Length: 546
Ligand code: G6Q
Image (cartoon, rainbow, N blue to C red):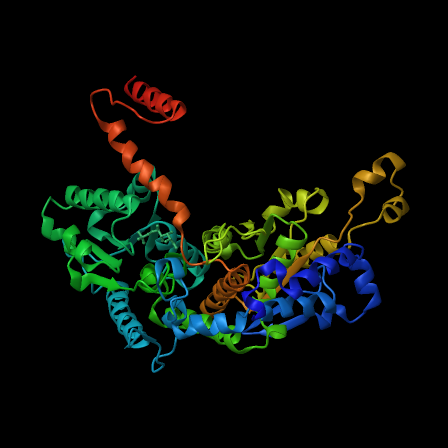
């Protein structure tokens, strides 16, 4: 029997890691660095435009060897190849998972059911480029003949988080004469606040929805249509000039009243949370222009190739995925903190939360058996240095182990005064403080009174990765997103779960559909919920009328 068909916890590398963990627990980063003066240079790699320093992890050469053995025993290489080949690796939805085709260069061929999807992707990219340019140069006019100055993306989840994050991340490259907003929440406040100061005659909505049936998006799109009609004199023909769609569902787009000629297509082999580089990125392309968008795709592709071809020892996404498994399953870590020291990446942690947690928050294996190990950790974070004045206390001195990813760029896009050196000094200081801490003797030597010493001790031994790139360009953003996409893939492949479905979001959606009429109907509904839900609905119905 092949090793990879053994349950994960029965594989030799997993068992060896269990024993090895008992040894690693006795070591400290202080010791490891003292014993190996070159550790900081040795345990670092360059790949796809990124420098990853992983030396401040709780690992030795033996740990790395065993983790890589675990990847091999889990048949990671074949799983990567299967995804790139277009095999239906999203087993529960019987779909290929080909976000890598969205950034494959023109001329490459990847077949799905006999069709070359790269040609289709390039066709849509060309159509997006023409449209974006027309809007950017003012050639695409609104119904009254005014040029479009405001773009509002309406979408949610994967049809929102990527576009918002990418817009914020690449704002430096965006057309500053235009306004970009993103409406996602079904809470009407989101729509009202996004539109309150805008002129409908200058506003174009991008309805972004893979299915074009999502409750939040359809509710917001209906309000947008009404807002346009109210503001443009009520002629339904006005809509065509102010609404385009990004979807896989042509029929629903037409039904909504959008000319299918103004629909930008993508495909069921693109998962929502892996779609920011598909037509879902239309708002990004309008903001930064087609050339920068192509550069973003190229950055993704370079990381894809690195992931596909680099040996595991030098493979950034593989190593990062393996470290997450090491801390989650052997140290019992519950979370991973992602800490970008780059203001433009302020929405990156929120984006990553969906990418990581919707992908790997799974409790059964591909075969449907309950897992006997922990899967996806909680990802969270805030940009530095803000976090330092907030939650870092717990990372430094709390009782939980929180592996951290520090992300930084050597060159700032906004060089003023001393800011960037100060910012970067904080990155290096934090990783140093987390790893090496401050002993009681060091605290005493500073003249601290004895009673205060324990409070001022930093135990250290808190692991971190430092991810360094030259500059936040569109290509660097693509590379960074792909780095995490493939790290998530690595984790999911080893945990043997389906990282590409999301059944866990269904139940709440279904129950909401049942409850909506119970809230809206005039006469008292006969409720058949549990006593808590029933009482809450009754209370809400009473309160909303008072
Ligand atoms: C992502 C999920 C989910 C999805 C939204 C929006 O992987 O599938 O977040 O993106 O539910 O779906 P639509 O694009 O179909 O509106």
